[in-house]
Amino acid sequence: MKSSRCTGFTMVELIVTIMIVGILAAVAGPRFFEIDAFRARGFYDEALAALHYAQKTAIAQRRSIFIRLDGATETITACYTSVFPCAAADQVPGPYGERPYTITAASGVDLQATGTYFFDALGRPYNAADTVPTSTFSALTISIVGGGDTRAITVERETGYAR
Image (cartoon, rainbow, N blue to C red; front, side):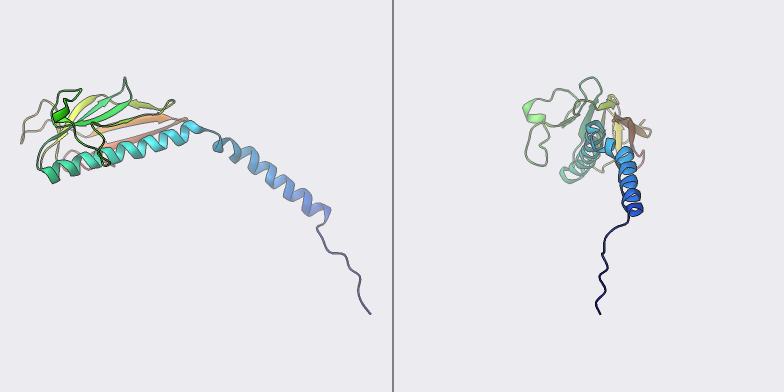
């Protein structure tokens, strides 16, 4: 004799599933639509990569690379001299050959740092007015604000490592 049992979900299972999906949509959904948070994270990653690139370029080319942080224009630029904007001969080429190597924050993202610094041929950080080997550089903190979050990049005094 065959059993004629119907299979499917009970009403309780369906209601619990709908409640869980509703809670997830209410909590996680808005995070997917906050574009400023994604832009801020992207600029943070770009800024960190730019600092690493400048330091490694200084070591590879055995010369100083100057970095200008401009909070007013929300840009980070690399040059061979401390004069900004760079003359054509003093522009550091970017990883893809772009000159000058400049990154700009997207709208809704704020770069909270200003100043000019440089990495010497050994990758050590200096203030723009310093002369190698005497450095008055102390740890530099660059804040990037966007999407309700603040991310910080710190450049270490002795090694120039950005993290």
